[in-house]
Length: 218
Ligand SMILES: C[S@@+](CC[C@H](N)C(=O)[O-])C[C@H]1O[C@@H](n2cnc3c(N)ncnc32)[C@H](O)[C@@H]1O
Image 1 (cartoon, rainbow, N blue to C red):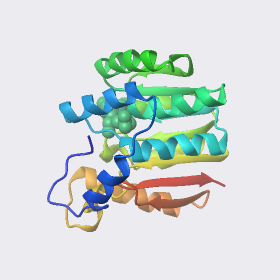
Image 2 (spheres, rainbow, N blue to C red):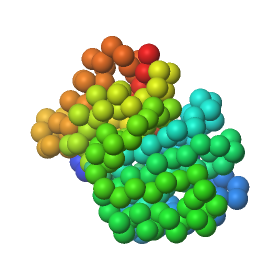
Image 3 (tube, rainbow, N blue to C red):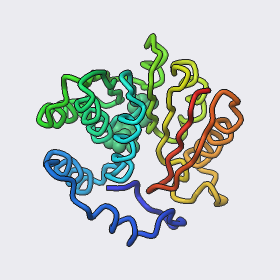
Image 4 (cartoon, rainbow, N blue to C red):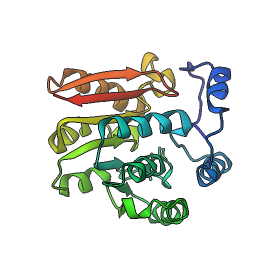
């Protein structure tokens, strides 16, 4: 269910990761089906550890306006939708380049009962973000890694003060420490440099699963 592992450093001991993910969350049958679909099809999703973090951050911040960049077949949107359902307000804008992914997401999120909180958009995530008026309370980024760097500025422009810019795969299986100069690894490294150089963001990296950055717009 996670991103494919290469000959990389592991961020979290796999036994620890499995241990944390072994605790069942009651009543989440659709979520578990989505996790099975990801596992069986080798589809990279954030997984339950990061999902729970997104859920908590949404509830803690009371976010109402959320946009995801790179939503896949709706697994991360599921966690935002679940939190918004608890809050009883707000929306999450789903974006993905693939209409097949979008159709699958609509099916799962309808069954989960969250579609009244989700707006599905198919196309380039950065272009959809640019076209949105904003401001957003949370922007969650999980597009292709080589596309990460310009998103620092784009997200900053569309967040409210006090809003959160959250990015997955910030440690990229440890490849950020290696000699790897693939476009994806260069993208994550440059993105992180830009994130920490932006004085309008206060950023922290949590080594949860593959690394998650949380940037507060000051
Ligand atoms: C890692 S998966 C997303 C997984 C999802 N966030 C989750 O955890 O359930 C990345 C997704 O981003 C989409 N994607 C990549 N680059 C994109 C772009 N520029 N615009 C829109 N979607 C993009 C891909 O189609 C893929 O479904």
